[in-house]
Length: 214
Image 1: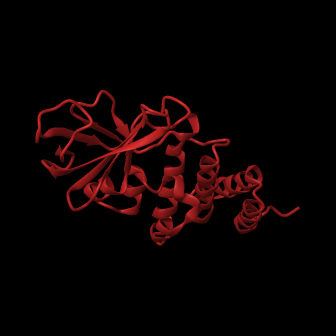
Image 2 (image 1 turned 60 degrees about the vertical axis):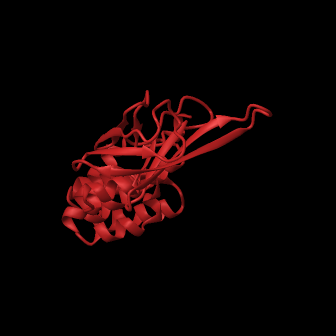
């Protein structure tokens, strides 16, 4: 009886993945990694399987494990760094801080690629979010309910921001603000990898919408 090679395990893993048999795909890619922990092909494809499962909210792996797999793949095959950016299977994690690090972006670029989500306390998902533009503007969106008919509405507030250090900044809302502050008042903000905090807001923001728990 001849032992199966990495190539055979990887081929079977790909076939299972295309057939949406994710459990089998995981099994084969793990067997390949057991034979060669640095196999970039198996590490990358196992990360893709986990990311697809995450997008479907089923059998979710910790996203930290997905990043570890991608890191191993990129370290052993640098061309995967470019592949990551185009791969639709990884869509669910593309706008996260750690993905930006693996892709080689600087912190300020990562900051503007991320949608920063507020908490998700119920069926309507995250209650608010920030999106920052590289040109120094931002949009804050907040979910609310219409006083007349009770329908869900999205309130939008715009403003500008400027960097103080690589991880601290100031924001200023234009025209009106979602919180009780003075006109033209600057608010301090800071981010530490995956967490964003802004003065005046009672909750923090993160790079994950936490949509599966909503």
